[in-house]
Image 1 (cartoon, one colour):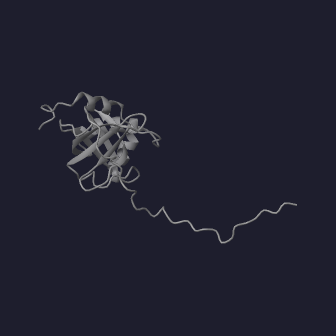
Image 2: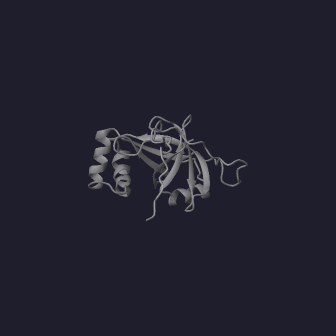
Image 3: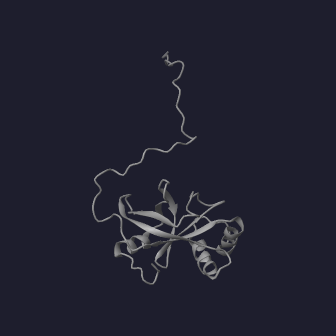
Amino acid sequence: MTDANRTTAPLVGEAMKKAAVAWISVPGGPALALWCVHLEEALLVVSGPGEQAAPGLADATRAQVTLRGDHGGRIVTWPADVTRVTPGTEQWETVAPLVAAKRLNAPGPAADLAARWAADGCALNRLAPTGEQLAGTALPADSLAEPPRETPAVRATRKPLHLHRVRRR
């Protein structure tokens, strides 16, 4: 389906306009909270060296996007077609500076940031709705909670050898 023939559901369109962070999952991977920018009826996500980590997104053709409200509740979940914006193309020259201008805490001007993305091999991906909505109109029967992922930052705490008593004089 081409972008010209695709219609975005009103709920998806409004949620994308207000989104600064989206939960994005590629097939076989967990959902990750990623910074995004809404532009031309799609979400744009930058990942790679010096930017956010999004394993598998740069090579994916499909993804699932979940947008949440101000209080953390899910608004809508929809499937997306993923296309990578290639440096040096007309689309890159148009889109990359606009995305770089929205990047918070960016070091230097937007043009320099977009040039760094191209030089470092960062992926600028465009996630466009496929036109079908997965969830959002009905509440799920289960909690949708996932177990915590393994990480080296978590470790078991040891109990102290002695419990100290404070002596009063």
